[in-house]
Length: 187
Image 1 (spheres, rainbow, N blue to C red):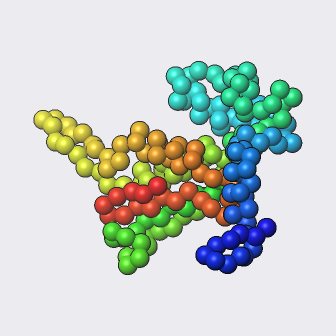
Image 2: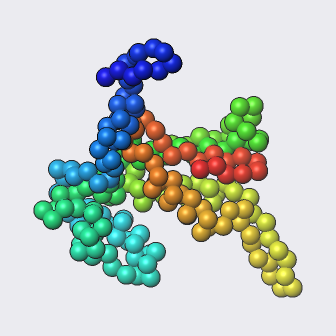
């Protein structure tokens, strides 16, 4: 495949081919059918995560099928595979970094951690990374104090889930990037 760019014709890159394919079929990675069978026991972390965030409600197979998690003949969709307990391929890679100053270019990197696992573990990893490294303050009261986190937990959770939901899983070699600076957090 070739692409016309700036008056020249060159071979299309892998990413350009994938993007053209996606645009032509309007198909998303997560809705494509795989050959892997659905086995409920392979998703214990997802089922527990659902219980924790839905007042103890059980996630049923009927609900999973209606969400498009697997087909009527119990074949997983591509997106569902990313939730399997043992998943650890590069499609879910996360890179978390802490910089000593206000930008990447001129400041010292304090730490860079990479992680890959199922989506539930990735969200937990990103949350813990930020919680352990963010600043905290407190307000003094008469007989106690109230701790205030730099980033409220609910806002962090929403940001992490948003990054997972909007990631382009067709592109190999990409990752979700969490960068912590003196004055901000970038996801």
